[in-house]
Image (tube, rainbow, N blue to C red; front, side, top):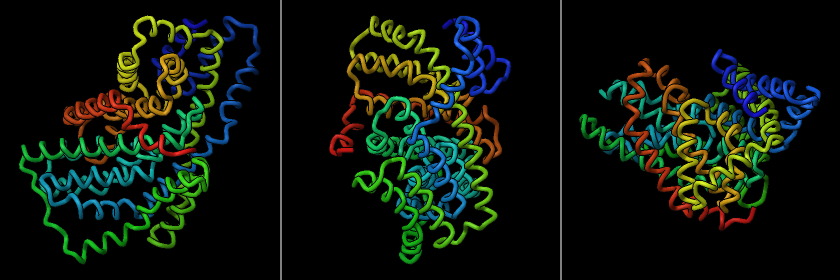
Length: 425
C-alpha cells in the first residue's frame, strides 16, 4: 500500500494536480486498492483533521497580517526602520530587512511580508541606483524572516500536528529570527560596499519623532500578542483573534487607511488563503492516516536511528532532507507532509519538540528563496519585474548565510530554548 500511496501522489503532482487534491486522491487510491475500508472513513478523517480549535489561529493571523498591510502599517514600519539603519552603507537594504523583521511580527507569513515591504521598498531602492537584482534578492530573503519571528502560521501547523506548545514555539522563534535578520544585514553591507551603494542622510529629529509616533500602534501589536500569551491572558489561538481585531481598529480608526472597499478585498483574500491551507490540512490528514496505518513513520524512524542515534548528526540528516523537500514544496505543505514522518524520529532521539519545530521551520524557510517553488522569489520577481533566473543567482549569498544560521541554531539549541524555558505555558 505504501508504494502505491507514494507513486499515486507523485504521479498526480507530475501531471499538474494541485498538491492538496493529490494527497486526497492518492489516499483514496491506496485505500481502495489494498483495503476494504469504505471511502467514508477518509471523509471522516478529513473532517477530524480540521476539528481542532487551535487551527482557528490560522485564518485570524492571516486576517491580521492582511489588515495591517492594507491599513498603512508597512509604510510606517519602513519609516521607523530608516531611522535606525538608513544611514549605514547599503542603508535602504538594511531598512528593507529591518522592516521585514518588524512586519514579520505582524503577518506570520513570508510571502505576505515580502509583498507588503517589497512594494514599498523596491521602487526607492531602484531610484537610488541599487541594482534591480540586489533589491529583489534583498526583499525576497528578508521576507523569510516572517516565518521565524512570532507569530508564525507554519509554527501553528507544526503545533497542531505534534501537540507541541505553540506559545513556546513563538517565544523560541524570537532569537533565531533576530539572528537571521542580523546575518542578512551583514550580507547587505558587503554586497552594498562592493557595488558602492551608500547610506542615506540621517532623518531630522522632527522627522524621526513623527516616524516613531506613527509606528507606535503598529509595533504594539506583537507586544500585545506575546505579552498576552506570556501573561496567561489568552491562548495563542485567542491571540490571533485579538490581533485581527486590533489590526482592524488600527487600520480603520487610527491610520484611517482601511476603507470598506479595502476591507472587503482583504476579507476575500484572507478567505482564499485560509481555504487553501485548510483543504491542505484536511486532505493531508487522510494521507497521514494511511502512513500511520502502514507504520511508515516508525519504519523510517528505525532506519534513520540505525544510521545514527547521536542527536546532532540525526538533525543534520533531517535538515538535509528538509532542504531538498523545501526546494519542491511550499513550507506549509512540507510541514504537513514531513512532520508526521520526522517527529517520531526526533522523539526517539530525545530531541526537544519545541526546538525541533523551530529548526524545521527555519530549514524549510530557506526553500522560500530557492527555485523552483520559492514563493518569495516569485513575489519579488513580480514586484521588481525581473526573471526568476537572475533573481535566483542574486539570492545565492543570502542562501549560504541562511544555511550558516541554520547550523548555528542546530548546534546551539539554547538559542531557541532559553526564552521558552523561562516561561510556564
